[in-house]
Length: 248
Ligand SMILES: [Zn+2]
Image (tube, rainbow, N blue to C red; front, top):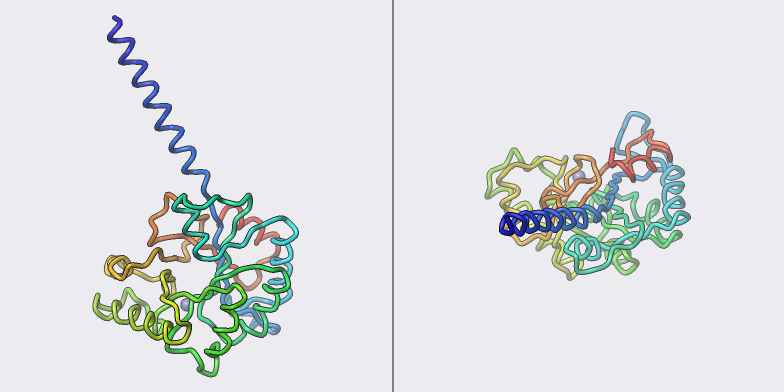
């Protein structure tokens, strides 16, 4: 009888220990927002072009409501449990390093003292519709992290393992020649990837990679399938506030 009691107590404490570990892990939730073009004159039917005025309302909301925008390193330190999580963390991301970022989005980020990450298409830098190398190094000094979004923005799931490897690894080299730093985080163009892509980013030693699946990221997500939610043309401040908490 005594043995049975000890065994039951052991089981109960194991259950409680397991439960509290799980509960603590679930406490790490970080919304990751994704933008593309921020424009004074967005094309009405282009989902990826977003109004400067609406963008500013969202950045002002974050500042006024006590959100802490994270650097990409802080984001992964929090997921790893090596840095404390602020009360209201957010990771702000942009994809495609288009030429509107420097004149339109960056001044608003500076005005509200917000950090952000720009997933940059390496071979397009200095092209007519992309950021220049000088703009990239300028924004880096003001809290913008430059990370890897391939060399030429293909749908990676249509490529062989070797082609995918080269797209991403060549971008690392090109971006390093511009920034002096090695990119450690990736975002899948079009959100498209397959098992080979997951293997490539892991084999190249990336800390993590972002999808555009929607949802709020947690420390329990696969590091190579971290969810982001997109803010699309027509989204209001209310949509933004809802997505911050639900990711959808
Ligand atoms: Zn893209």
